Image (cartoon, rainbow, N blue to C red):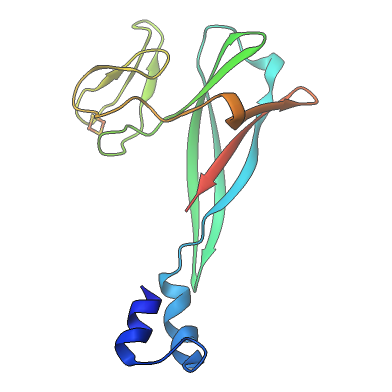
Length: 150
Ligand code: FES
């Protein structure tokens, strides 16, 4: 977008540092990634999703924001872990786990997701976002997920 703006003005970014200074930080949305610790793997019960929350701060130009995240950790066995976002894939409300129904429920439009995040009912277009395989690791007994923001 900045390049388009520069070309419309007939300049390169090297010729207009003031514009770069004024506009660039407000438009840039750099992607960041990090390994986020979710707790000791041994504390999670097999077959029972547990909600873990954390907050990440981010600086974008002049704006500093704090985003809160919720992840359901489902330990399927001692060596198999699935982590699901608690953000509904319809319009981003937060889902909760209903132990008696064995499903995640979204309060906004009555969506239901299975224990592995699959859509059971309602308007969501896809399963809950998940972390498994290369996006999950255990170091010194602590479970981490690889989170990409931006
Ligand atoms: S936001 Fe979850 S069903 Fe609409």
